[in-house]
Length: 483
Image (cartoon, rainbow, N blue to C red):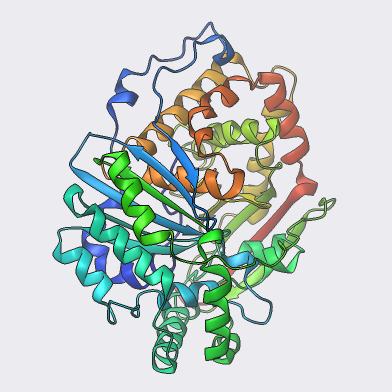
């Protein structure tokens, strides 16, 4: 269920490697799989719970090395490609206090050289072998991946192990990347209309816990304050094998891959990990409204956010299906109401987890939507339509079996679109996330069963509890630029 970026944030999540490989980063675009085409549609008379379990099963071979590195292997002979993905359990919201933006800064550092590869040679190694690569920083992890011709799998495993074993941490590299990241902040947030809206802004307004509510991209003073000692400690602590998962997806022989992984990764020592930070958010009992002046914007904008149910709870799955009905696609309730019927805007977008998808996060999350509109359209009118469409789902019988079936079909389509891509990244992303957060990458094969447990009544109750106005934060952009 990969959701494309809903705002111009590719410059943030692509990171240092992505800026060089962007032109060839077709890995981020998923293709429809044969499994999607073969999947039987839901009928109008049967609820999803009555359908048979899906026959399509993704191979999952999961084990842990003695040094704590989690490994997931998922062979796929669809194309002669192999994807290697290394995910580290450190992201935006569990970075150290007074070092905002440090997780993202460190993502850049990972391309500055290692024991056997000089500065930027990792990127050249991938590209000269016909591959593509990328790295990103998300809420709860930082990841790196390479997709290469299958016969180059060993080379990529060696290269990933080389930088996990020892990064080239020098003052010159640190100073250089501090400048790069600060320039990104200036160009893409501070000097951009709607910069940071709403993906960076909304968590800071809607959340109360510092870890969920600080400036993930980094305050300039904090980026300047990072020292070489900070970087060395950060690498030793968070880039240890026992804080990571390695995923291999594609055309390979598992036994051979295991031998290579044992050879290159097993000698890397683990490191004691700090206690997990408390990410809990208090229950919101009153609607919050904020206005942000934007000197570069020439049209008003509005974003809304609701706190999500706890991940993996029954309500969580129901909320994902409500998102399909309300926001996903031109047939969604909010698109039809605000674009097609009233002409308030030319588009309304949003979803769960603006920096990823519905599954690749671990802590509290927001369901968000956003739009720009003309000066003649009042913000209260937009919020009124939002309330009207949500209230329809809260009424008895507001969610019918046919609506539930539609939501499940849309969910299944996007799910298979992600995991069926020939490049393997969508599958690797899910497997890595479930290994990191649940210690169970095989969850990828049980997701459909969880959605089939959802009933219209559960969706109605979930809407009543989590889509109530008192659980909402509204952020308005006040445009100061001349039209």
